[in-house]
Length: 219
Ligand code: T5A
View 1 (cartoon, rainbow, N blue to C red):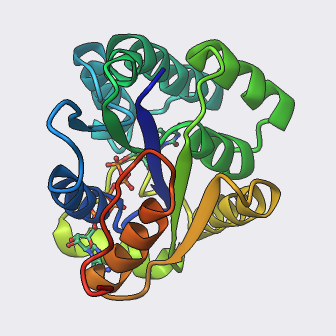
View 2: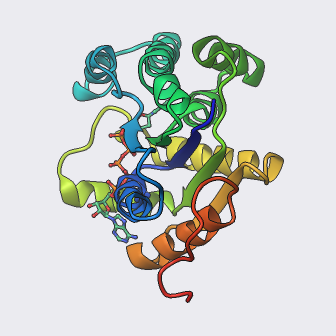
View 3: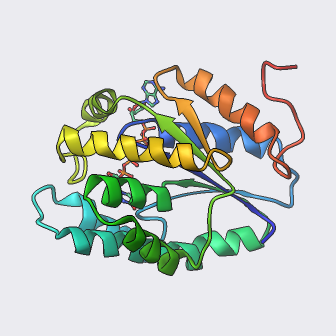
């Protein structure tokens, strides 16, 4: 596949959506007209996925078993990969995706306690082996992230999990970043959106086949 698959990860309120939008706006001006920048997310990147997202997140009191939760995220991903991500990559587009397989490792693995081999098998089944070309991990203290989310309104089912749970999720991302330093780039998310965006642009600049221009402010 000739496109590029770039994923944004992090705990609740880390600023992924904000950075994806800034990155897309910047990339639109850097790439040639034959390629598009596609923004998508998990869960909920497809029509079926939006229904799965509602099941997973909308009712804060819904008692979903952890195994059901794991499989619903995987079902969302399977549909997302087949119906949206792969077709864009085959066209040569740049796909910016809010969460992917590392979310399942961090949340259902480190957070809920599923065995890593079991998570890897589920992720493999859902993706057919598709991996990101690059993942930006927006690293933020979990209480800061939850405060940001609270300012926006009420918390969803996952956000209402305990602080311990969210801390284990953050630790999961840290361990993944240690194991996959070439694929996962840690960004300090406790900075202004503009400062974070500058670093993202710098990293994308050196990624072969993405852009040829220099980041704003570095000329
Ligand atoms: N999940 C997902 C799993 O458990 N397993 C899986 O396999 C997958 C795929 C998804 C939930 O599902 C879980 C993880 C999640 O719990 P979601 O609604 O998509 O739910 O939640 P998030 O992905 O966490 O999205 P959020 O919108 O909550 O967080 P973002 O996108 O990281 O943050 P963003 O950009 O929306 O910013 C949040 C607020 O902070 C401000 C923004 O203006 C906004 O108000 N902000 C900043 N403030 C200060 N400084 C900055 N640098 C800021 N950047 C943004």
